[in-house]
Amino acid sequence: MDKGPSSGADEELKLEKWTSVMNHIVNIHTGHGTKFTQCEHGPLVEDRKWLVKGSRPFKMVAEVVNSGYLTKDIRKLSPLHQTYGLEVYHKIVLHFAPKHTHYHFWAMYARTLLAALHYNENGQKPQACKKDGQKVWSVAYPKHRKGKHAVVKPVKVQSTFDYVAKLMTAVVTRREQFPTYTVARTDVDHNMPAAPEPLSRMYEKFDKQELIDARKSRFNTVV
Image 1 (cartoon, rainbow, N blue to C red):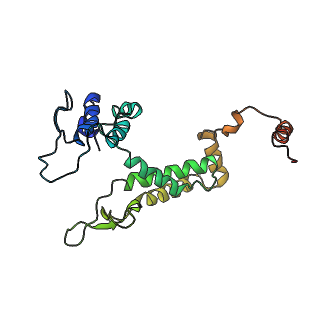
Image 2: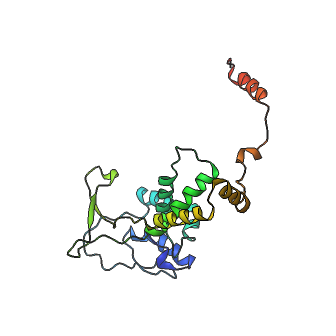
Image 3: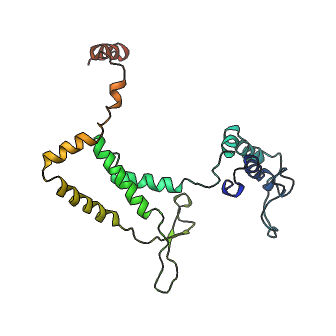
């Protein structure tokens, strides 16, 4: 239920829309609140099975919907931005800098910048179309439905890599400016900040032998 964008910045309206579900599931579609007074759907003509107010299933749903932790967050839903784009960016970062590989600071820094360049160029790709103009879709099977249900997803156009050509041009330009590695290294040392120290250096130092003795005492084992 996407209540954030349709409610703007009005926190009370967001909350009333969210809690109105407790009325909706018992076939009550009006009188939800002072700002959200009735459901926005049209007439419900088909037969449906509704929950009974006060029943055990109703109370179980109410525990979730009316949870203090959840209702507090519902008020803060973004009126404009959702997390899909951020999730896509994180996936691209993992492609350029997978967690199973260790990188030093500047290597990680460079790979993160590459991920940002790739996302900026391809993060808003349009849906692909056939020659006749029809949009391209793919069929997907949600895992939790175990093949008993299928959905369609839009197929996006192929990714582009124009940023690579720009990076190569920048590399050639820098090579012309600094003909030797020594000159280029001196320029980097002079203009780029030093890499930050590892976080572990900020921690308290412990005596290794004392830690070994503590482990022996705790587990009563020979190390």
